Length: 271
Image 1 (cartoon, helix red, strand yellow):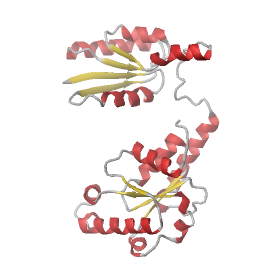
Image 2: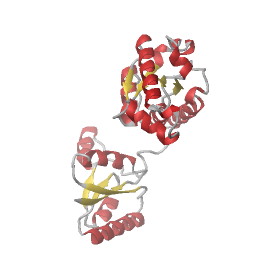
Image 3: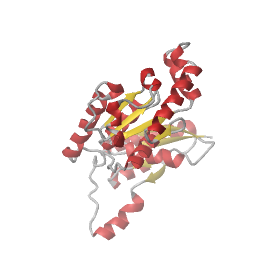
Image 4: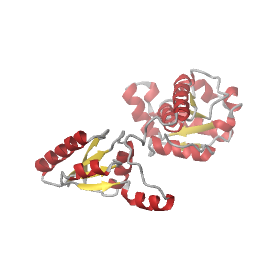
């Protein structure tokens, strides 16, 4: 079975898409042809979205599904004229909150991911710049790092650091363990002095070999023997220094970041 899904929002569409995917993932055996329609914030754009949905309906013969986070009810009604199944993610909460707070919702558009708080936005930009300038051991000045990811090459350090910076404003640095580091019996001294911020990333040898082979096929760097040796040595260093670590093989970047922040006690709001 295949169904068409539209994630529609008067802002970026990130909330609709994220929650929508989580809901749809519960229905196995169905392929969803997903489309994101952000910034549907005027009657003209809502009518254009409705026309696109109607076209998809006529083409497939199956009623499209719309996951909607538009705040303006008038825009929602225009899109609903398409005949799609409308799933309004805000509707179940608004009436209860209006009653509890004694206030009516504003219906203002473009509020979910706008730059409302410049201080929080600046913190996210600063954290992103920090992650870029402290990537792969480029800078070893780590005194102000919130977290320092350590692991062998291609274990997922860089994307995890960038995600934590962009999503949570976390100053995340990372350091790749070299062969010289792995041959020692302890972590480099500059890492040991920041031990409370360290977190190790591990990965299955077969998966790491596959990732490295895509970058350097047929090389010693990508060989199974080399990968197994590096991972076993890294695990020994983590355990010897009491550094917490997780296996990232079956985890998404979001899961990795959440587990790290939970283990290290980093409580930050999402942006």
